[in-house]
Amino acid sequence: MSDLAISIQDLHVSYYGNEAVKGVSLSIDTGNLVGIIGPNGAGKSTFLKSVLNLIPRDKGEVKVLGKSVKEVRKKIAYVPQRSDIDWDFPITVLDAVLIGTYPSLKLFQRPRKKEKEWAYECLKRVGMEDFSKRQIGELSGGQQQRVFLARALAQKAEVFFLDEPFVGVDVSSEETIVKILKELCAQGKTVMVVHHDLSKATSYFNQLILLNKELISYGSTSEVFQSSVIEKAYNGQFAFLNEMGV
Ligand code: ADP
Image (cartoon, rainbow, N blue to C red; front, side):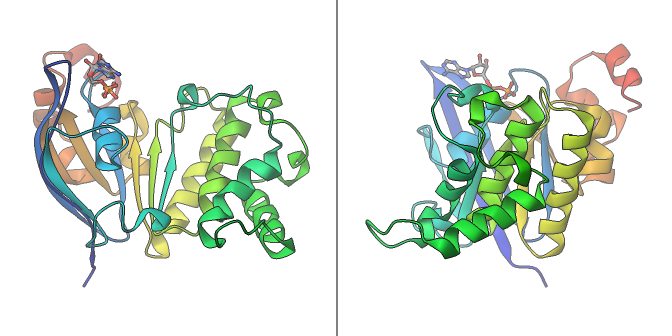
């Protein structure tokens, strides 16, 4: 039997009095690759950030691996939207990945050879080892996203959260990222991905969370990805749904 990776009870989040996430409750077992889908402005990104305590909740309890996010922070890796990152920040690719090893370092301890070798291994896994000395700002969107995945891998986390990792990313990078996420889940890690594009949802994820402020549906991809369910979130955008093959 699987263990519980994430449990969320009655989560509410608002901006200036407008509710963006309304009363979401759900529990996710370890080893799942979960897509968070829903229309633009449905609160997908807000949901992810509030689960991680990056923005305040009005109400609600979140446990990751049975504990508060603060207690298990080292076991959680987060890859923000590319647009949330300052790509002009002067840092090389290898150093950006090395940051992922910091949770395993003691206070004031600098990364040693061991950490540098591990960071390089992680870069290899995403096919970016030849770019280790480049500045992150010089990379393409797909390359940047691979580097941030390598940083998450370097952290040796148990639970991974990614916000729109495929936006502005080339096909080959997207395939590499999906392959690695599937491997992580096969190893018993848990991965949650905010993903606005329905067309790939069935081949990428084994579970889906369908949001439109409220939780519309959560379950296996085959249960959630049905026109009668999806329509509830995408009020009346039928032509669009037909194009997506729903
Ligand atoms: P999604 O990720 O599904 O596109 P978001 O979580 O980004 O949705 O946004 C949900 C709602 O909250 C939207 O109406 C958006 O305009 C609003 N919102 C998001 N971020 C902020 C913010 N920093 N300040 C005010 N409103 C916000």
